[in-house]
Image (tube, helix red, strand yellow):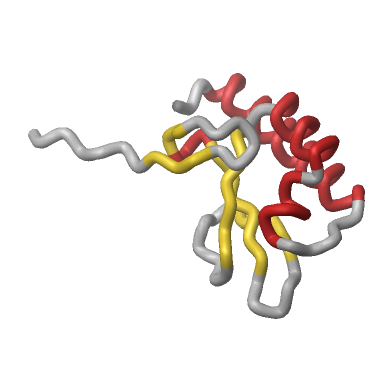
Length: 98
């Protein structure tokens, strides 16, 4: 059977190319609303961040998504992002999904 390519995406915080399954997509819609996109199918401009709590905290301190999407985001967005990443990271460790 032929080996399939693993899709890679760039982590916006660290700049590393990582398999898409190990990232979460954040999307800005055409109306300027920024939200998490766990399915990866929402329309709009997307940016990816690793499923790592330390990287999410670094994104909060550096205001990474404010710069990437050219909008002003509340700290509550980053808190939600950190909580989501923490939950997904715990799930990966529990179920050993790669």
